[in-house]
Image (cartoon, rainbow, N blue to C red; front, side):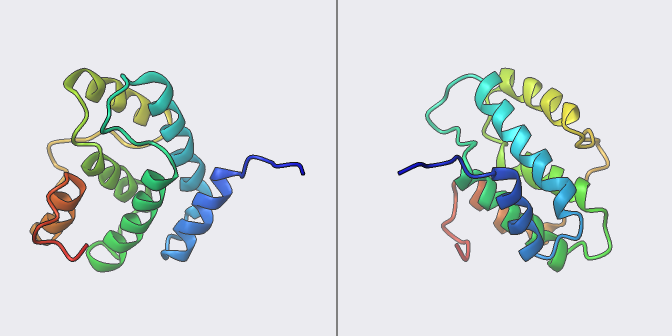
Length: 136
């Protein structure tokens, strides 16, 4: 029996599209390539996860943030913000590398103007491992 490696970019694009993301075919490969670079270039930490579980969480929350809070916004910056929230537990050294990797893959740089609505606080807590008051 032959097995093939699934095309994670296609899987990610379909997941994004099923979550209402119009630019899914553009953003899907960006997320997959970023996750691969995260595995390859960041330090090895027990709490780091850049696999399909991470990708699935990102795709679900990009769609949810867009639908609930930012329906008319550009989707790439939404994806970038979701990724930054999910990776807020990176070491300080890896955080610098991570921002470089995000820029390499076409995600906009973070700025002091990036505002996360207060209504997203439960998502941020859940992404940071504090799901005590979250619906998840």
